[in-house]
Amino acid sequence: MASAAPLPFGAGIDVLRLTDIGFAAPAALLARYGLTLERIDDGVAIPGSYWGDSEAGIIGNIVYARDDTPVHSLLHEAGHLIVLPPQRRAQVHTNATDSVPEEDAVCVLQGLLGDALPGVGRLRVWADMDAWGYTFRLGSARAYAEQDADAAWRWLFEHGLIDADRRLRLPH
Image 1 (cartoon, rainbow, N blue to C red):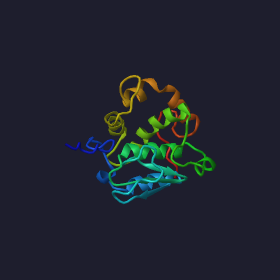
Image 2 (tube, helix red, strand yellow; image 1 turned 30 degrees about the horizontal axis):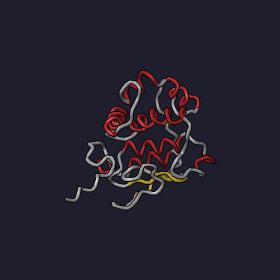
Image 3 (cartoon, rainbow, N blue to C red; image 1 turned 135 degrees about the vertical axis):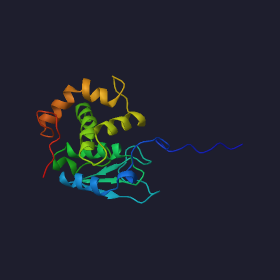
Image 4 (cartoon, rainbow, N blue to C red; image 1 turned 45 degrees about the vertical axis):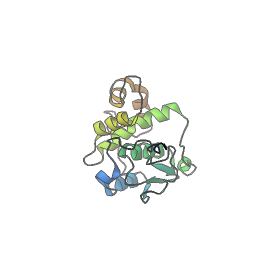
């Protein structure tokens, strides 16, 4: 008897996906940071995707996603580009960094970017990160951001991405 093909990573996990919110608001948000959101047709491999399947991809100033891409994945990969100076962005293909402090900052930033999308918000992004399988010392993305991420918050502040009240600074 033949066994069934394994499901792609994340298949069947109930997280918010781009099909749920559309591409217009995320594209407008990314454009404020000088990034382009490029929509990939269903069933086509996502260029620059580190994890493959429905995970967002990054190459240069472009974030690639499909309708089935989780919103948290899009925001995470966009976050990697947002934290980089423009000259470093141009060199990115698939993997943006091996810096632990930068990765930690991006995990907080993706929640804050969720606040900038209508109907999303940081709490949904962080809950979806948990559902997807991110792991944090305190057991959840929210607990990490609220109780254990002082260095990440400091990193975001020092790089001008948040204000002293830990609110996202959106470029005009």
